Length: 172
Image (cartoon, helix red, strand yellow):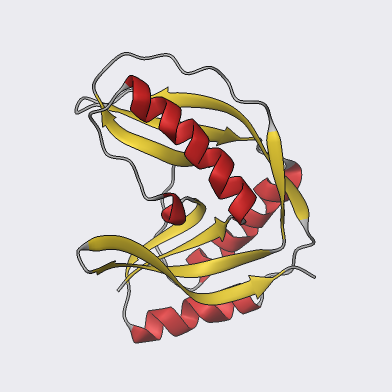
């Protein structure tokens, strides 16, 4: 099973992100647009895991200690890619978010998970394979309070990519 650890969003945040996504789609109708129900902030991608690794990951999440903190969405941007650009909503890398992601990564690597070594750049993917060179106005900043992180499974249900929460770690 394909696993990752994420911050999932409340309905209001998903709605705001979907509004930005609609602006991208109206300017660039070709591309791939994730289902708004799947929008999340990935903290760690674990890849293909077996049942034993699932249990180990749950143990790491259950040992996480963090207090609620604000996640601030402040900008929209793109990563240029050969097969089309990836558009994203940018999140401020606060001390709380950075510490949470680093603590999680340390815990996971200490038990053998191989994680991405690139610097953490918090963003939510809104669109992929956008070939048109477009401009999207910056949305008004908004935020959400983070109270949990979740171990997620990526699967296909009726042919649609779906992210299923398997385990939740709550803030203190």
